Length: 77
Image (tube, rainbow, N blue to C red; front, side):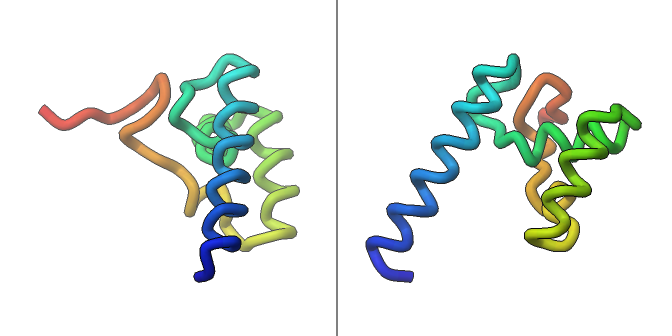
């Protein structure tokens, strides 16, 4: 990956995490990860967003989910 491509990916992650923070989520978690967790709990907004993101990448939310980040993080003992 070129330096420009890496820069653009990093910028997109920054915007994604900022958007999640602005909507009440953890500052280190992406909206996709949060939506995946919400979809697993049957929350409509998570299901809808994950369906939309599946048009871009199959199972995007499942791939993006971070189990050690966010309000429902699973932390090691």
